[in-house]
Length: 192
Image 1 (cartoon, rainbow, N blue to C red):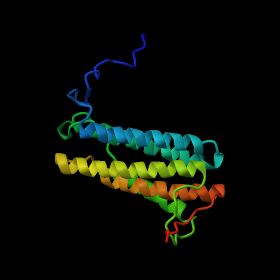
Image 2: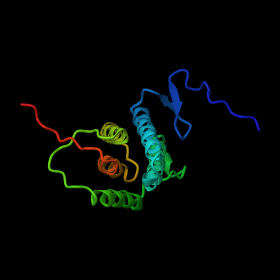
Image 3: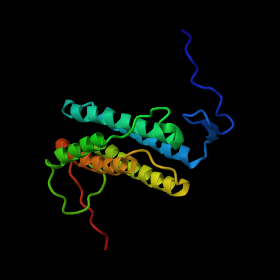
Image 4: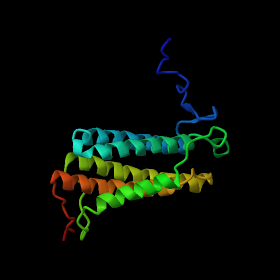
């Protein structure tokens, strides 16, 4: 079997293909949106790779891989015109997956001290990388809502809820990792 080439040259004029085969400019807000999802997925992969170095985080790494797949599911929907999503049987973010995400948040949060102040992003290196995932998830959420407001296109099922919950998940995960690693949380102290 002959191996296919990575480069196709079809995007050399600044266009890319959607799932339907239709072409659009790479500068289109739709492309920017699912490109931002790709960046989030890459950041998550980096964090998962760091977490995988500790056996105690294996359950979390496995869950992160499920979340990464859900991000691909969302990206595939955004890479397709709404009228073609059903035709291509694109996977959706289910209510059950949202519930799984909430259960993971609650499971970790139950082991954490209640917050009395805002905390600075940081702590251990891996927790810091998870905070980058958190802020990237918020960026994707804002771009998704902006895309919806300007295009009036129906958003993929549970997409806003998923991204909103995902940033909460990363916040709690970063705190949880810091707790397990014994890294201090630094409270925000407003400058006078």
